[in-house]
Length: 319
Image (tube, rainbow, N blue to C red; front, side, top):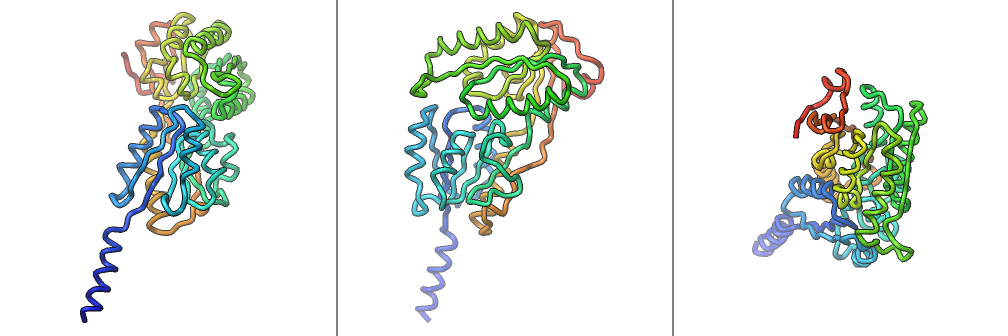
């Protein structure tokens, strides 16, 4: 009798105190990542123990962290961003992986089949985000010349460029672009002043020649937003981008909720760790809900007067 009670206590204790170890990996700080992480952490059970790994812009550092992940110390890896996701997927083949926060997931070289990776990773992403957001906006705006600035070696920027080329070519819109690199030949980040000057020169080439400017999500552009914003005001060009940049000061924000992506990733984590789903059984795509946010006060500063259809289909702010 004592043996059975002892056995019951062992089984009961192992179930009650079972925990799962999750590594959250990101190569840089980005406000979007923080919102995604909040959605993820707030929706996982207490038995999921989370450890954060942040390269702070140092790719070699995050590679070194990833090299430490083994099935003995990590049950699941949650990746934020294109660079981190690529490194983890390349290096780790025996631990489940969930990815999100890709700048242009369809062109990232990571997602080849939206129904299944056929491997040990899955994720939550929005297919053709830049293309679809611009397509929706163009129902209400008469875009004739679109400006776009991008980093020449950033995978997410290059992917977004492909989406924008697809949008402009199918809608008979002239695309005006400039590019530069924010790192030296050893892939170390250039000094802030050098990057700031490159941004100024790029915008001086683009903005006089376009009627709208699309700003892609980027740590570099977030860090130098004040410079970008001053040029947009100077040339009086309406700006389009993520709602993160709308909070900073652009004219038109395309809003999708990063917190929701984190919450959906948490659901995938529970399915993998608690219900024994294989990552390859879980599809990538989620149906996005786009909202148009428009600031009438900023529009007045640049003499931008949108039509009635745009106004009635937007959430209007004045800051």
